[in-house]
Length: 489
Image 1: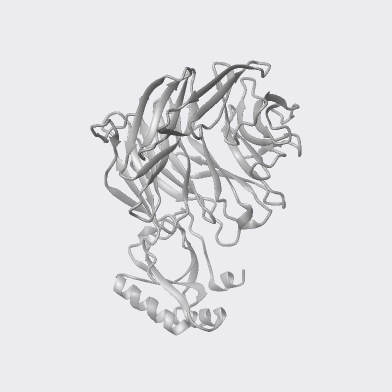
Image 2: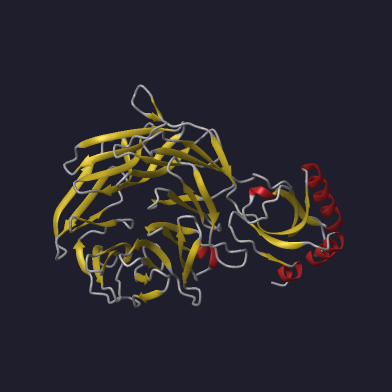
């Protein structure tokens, strides 16, 4: 069995010249379930994007100022014994780095789920990790993470999708929990949070019992005030909240063809409502609200990705359409000081794999390196690079050989003599390995033929007495254990 490149990530990069704009399409192997979850631009100008997938380890990729790969890695690797942090993947920029938030899913671990927050520097080194729920059997699922003015982070969550009894917890800049809101203090399903100028927090929730949208103040010590109804309808669960010019804006994510937002005064009373209906050929995937405009990302009925700016009166200020050769759609865009960061999908129907699209554009949606067709659509096409994403996990390292023919022969001989399932891989493809240029012949704890696993490994140790187990992934840590330790777990 040959493992090399059975699952991979292609990066197709169209780099900028001088404008610091770029576009990247990420193409995953057909056996992967990873999805692109979030992206942020760090203080040094690099871009970090997060991937999560069912039963998989979270994956991070950092791109430079021209879309080039700076680093990539697995984090929170579960090693085959603990739960996979397979959901969320929210990112926030912090000083000299960023934080990422994930949670495990009930389908993978029963009713006991945890939340993990990881603080990393701009080079991808982990500074600290905090896990909520590791020592209990409660259900903890995250909905939002925000950066705080003191260098820490605030995380909101609920026991499950659209389940009430929300919560929030605050972590210090060094990863210590400062407080956790008490049970039932937050009435509804939490979706978003902001920090006020005074250092307190506002939590946005959907209250299913009253079918309303509510706001609650949580002070800097975690004391929760009673809920205030700010809308007699429920904002969608992905509704967002934002401070703009000392005003609180609450807006829908923009699904379908309608954008909805309202502004609150200091007493949380709605004082301005905006509703924009897109034209029939456009579909919104998300919206970012600015001072007097909506930045909309989505797609067109012709299969192009769409980015457009609308005034609050519904006027289309500008639009850009993007074509990678497949069915393209943008499901997130964020307006930044230095441009716009957007990402989405670029499905290629002629091939059996998923494709993700990431763009760093200027403030009008233009990206250098893309050609323009007669209809004004920006065409994105370039070369491909490859990263293996799916972690093989624990493998029994039997032998390292210098050429592939020897790897094939050694793997086959071990399988015939021991009955174990065997394979081989090219060592430089995996960051957790030594980096030497060679082929690693391995066995996995699975019988290819009849017989017990214990007998299979006993025979293997007779052939290769130096065999040991090693964790193989794109993570940076090297984890090993003896065959005896592995089999006795």
